[in-house]
Image 1 (cartoon, each protein chain N blue to C red):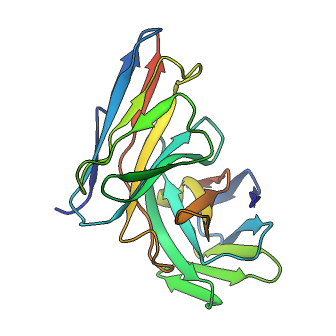
Image 2: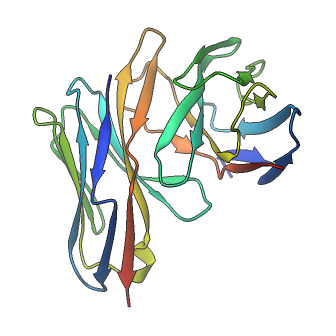
Length: 114
Length: 115
């Protein structure tokens, strides 16, 4: 059964620092990996989707990489800002007998201090 | 504005009551999902649906029921059989469950509290 872990569970950095969030999964047979941001009490906002055939995706100050063979993905945030403070979750997709669904990691809670 | 709406935002349930959470999307997506989120944990799949009039149990379906009578609507009923229903419930959709490379979009969530 697919399991997704995220390290660290929480991270606190001063404004302006570059940082890396990690996501690991146990079964490399995935179709894509998606990174989300969640603000307290809110739904999830999609940040980046990496297809299984891709190595990385970029959007503004965010860069996500994917290494399927080792079961790892990283989310790189450049020049962090207080507005980046949120919980970041990764999710991997897989097929079961019915269709495609996602398995989520527990998230990394990020605090960027002004 | 296209998107996913969930209502109510907050819901309180007494012991033994059934309650229904609403999820509506105007994205013309075929696939819809219900997740439960507990504090400090990731999302766990309750039910999902690939198409109208069809749905499948997820990892934690016991004590929940769904229907998919219309493409845009996927309501979730939390029954009295669910022993620990207090949680944050999130609805999501994708263009198609069978399409490999499409992202999930989420609604704003419903927080359910048992009194």
